[in-house]
Length: 143
View 1 (tube, rainbow, N blue to C red):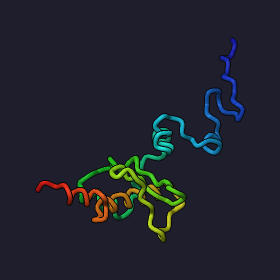
View 2 (view 1 turned 60 degrees about the vertical axis):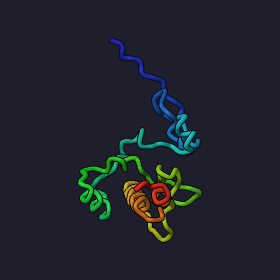
View 3 (view 1 turned 120 degrees about the horizontal axis):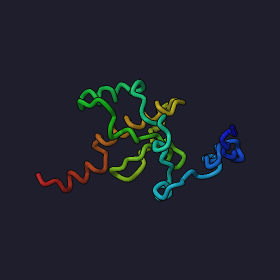
View 4 (view 1 turned 135 degrees about the horizontal axis):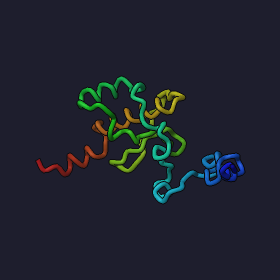
């Protein structure tokens, strides 16, 4: 009995059809139309390891979930620490802009912990009286 044919290996030893292992080192990694449009890679779509590890919640996030009565991060699951102009930052979709991490904040080496800090920063910024939507609310509220 003949053994089934094995797919030919790519240059780097990966199965044929697999991406180059150094794809993100050699390119911008912006493969989809949406990624090119927003100028960043959407990693959580491809890597289940980017789903939040609830054992790494910051004390603030634990309290936030408790106060809100939620059992998960839900709307914050796709929030990750990124970089804007070389500075650590988190993207705020409400204002369509980056919120930079304040100077002096020590960032951990672990990406999960960095993402938890990004989520906390985003919530605190959105609750801040300095958030741009507060000014809009004050200017246009009806009651």
